[in-house]
Length: 153
Image 1: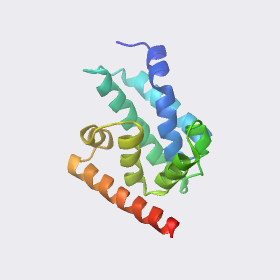
Image 2: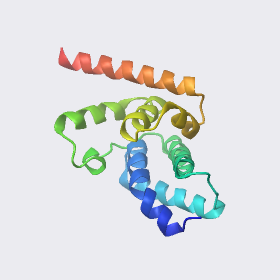
Image 3: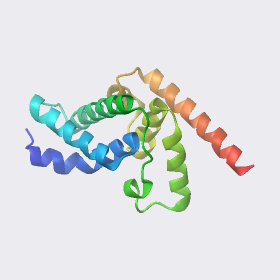
């Protein structure tokens, strides 16, 4: 079983990126990451693999972020340079467009393209059917395509 220090050092940066992309506010993202680690400490779950561990932490984090966003109402505007400091201008523009998507589409697209999860893994994290995740990805891509095509006109 991993120590708390190992869990934090392994997942802190990834969880922060996901939380910031979800909440849009640095302080809220930090709070959600801390709350996620506290839930891990309270539960001390044992996992079959590192991927199961990562998926559990992500699910807890995303649930906490979703609850916070519902409670507060609006999402803040994320400082994308905080999330992706080394990205090119064009990539930052695309990330900004992804952040405009409805939360379910945004989460699916983010986990698939930026965290490299499979649709099956995303389904477990989001507590959805895999076919639903594929639908979110499809609809999210369509929205992005429409927005990007309208920008070029």
